[in-house]
Amino acid sequence: MLALGMMSGTSLDGVDAGLIDTDGETIAGFGRSAYRAYAGNEAGVLHGALGHWPGDPGVDEAAALSVAAHAALAVDFPEAQVIGFHGQTLAHDPGGRGTHQAGQGWDLARRTGRRVVWDFRTEDVRRGGQGAPLAPFFHHALARWSVAQQRMEAAPVAFLNLGGVGNLTWTDPRIDAPEDACVAFDTGPANAPLNDLMRARRNLAHDDGGALAASGRVDEGVIARLIQHPFFARRPPKSLDRDSFAALAGAVAGASDADAAATLTHAAAAAVAAGLAWLPALPSALLVCGGGRHNATMMAALSRRTGIDVQPVEAVGLDGDMIEAQAFGWLAVRVLRGLPTSGPATTGAPAPVCGGRISTPRAIR
Image (cartoon, rainbow, N blue to C red; front, side, top):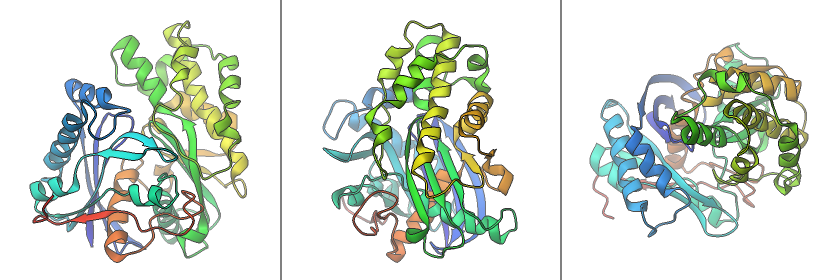
């Protein structure tokens, strides 16, 4: 069926929406996509609710904003038969309070007149998983699609998503079942510390192209201390909250804007390099999606620190801006079919989990 996946990530820049034609296993094709940026006041509302849980101040406002922004974008896709709605992650604590994505799927279903699959992470966490990352099974489908399209060799490959947090998927497209073919985990901080620095110091959303970081000097001491954090020694699967490494801001507080940006950019790359030790084997390539791939300084740092061929996913015919959105369209169809969306090697759940709730336009809260 034709599914519309919608994603607002931890970078807090806006909503991505992408159509995908799928049965929840294979990919028949990709459709149109669109992006709706958050205005400055909207981003401020979301930033103000970060780290908050249901009932906390600012959460209801953030949830209403999330649904309204997604509904405004979904109206441009009347052909979609189902919507996969991730919601806006405000807090993620799988070992404690759980996971919190703001925005009610029943409200989006009512506004759009379409079935909505949502709340993808809660069931995985309830069963003992990390609730993240959730794109790995889709990465496996993408690898198999790229092999079938002869844009990639049939060999293990790694997908690296650089959003607010980094996450890595190692997958072998020669294996049929995604739950048997993937190893995945969050790598560490990615764009979030850098974006927060740019917002605080220069009132900018991000370091465009990595230009500021390219003009600065990296403090390797900060990076060495980062990699000593217990998170990097912990065996996957493992996941992070957007602000798990908020201490990085203090570590570069005394540095110039350029030096701080350079250090935070290389910190993201060093975190990925540290994660390679947990893969079953080094991949033939590191295919990068998410906003970080537009940062030339970050891409160069990845190449230098990993020693692997680093390419944007466009090199194998994919749209790196829309992969996470498309993932939730694909996952929505899997949920409708009762297929697993996560498993032991991706989130640490003890058995494969079909996460997600289904709301119809007439559903009652």
